Length: 323
Image (tube, rainbow, N blue to C red; front, side, top):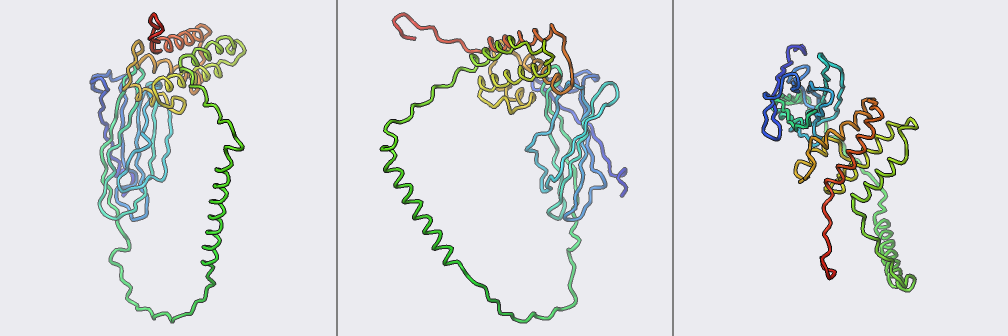
């Protein structure tokens, strides 16, 4: 069947984490999603089917497909995502997901859940509908009508070195045991003093404030290194937030940080404020956005403020040396 006859596009809804439905978001700000199967939903065993998913959003929105998404009995063998400009200043993320059929019969592609954070800080989920796929086995029912002659018995002689391999392995194992025993017995003789334990790690806020102060004194924007300055500012804050709240902030995207922070108590700091700060740094790094000189100082001041309001108060020592 022609590919155009197999395209079924359904725009699905989503809801924000604070209970606001997607329909309550103004239409001009609302993201949308549609999906379809290219080339028909009936394929042969071992063949591939392509699932297309198109997300339409604003440039500052961050919407992505989680890496651990399941595709049922189908296996994802290729994923291509192209981003292009849409109408009205929108951005279109066009996903092409190639799925391989490994089992015959009726199956379906489960609905996919796209998650993300809108420009205003709202966390949303956009879901696609499940898609039925029929996988046929071209060899099912095939019969071989011509009987084949029984092959004659052939004597096969093969040299077997198993006993040598086993003996060699046992010899190596014995030598390793003797070596370890020798090292253990002589370790204290060779190392009379145990190495001192490393000092405890410094508090994340001390490290962050020290790096921010060095960044301020470096004068990188005045030397024409504004993009590098924003990248370093973003990495300092990602490292601080990760160390302060117990996750790897340097290896997390802005959207992943916001999702993790949903379960953390951040007195004095909202998710929207943190997203806005990290997103501005991302715009300089990925979107070739160039802020003015005054905006550099504003971003640095905001970084200091985030560290200060999220740093836990240190206990005040009581008289007599007890805390």
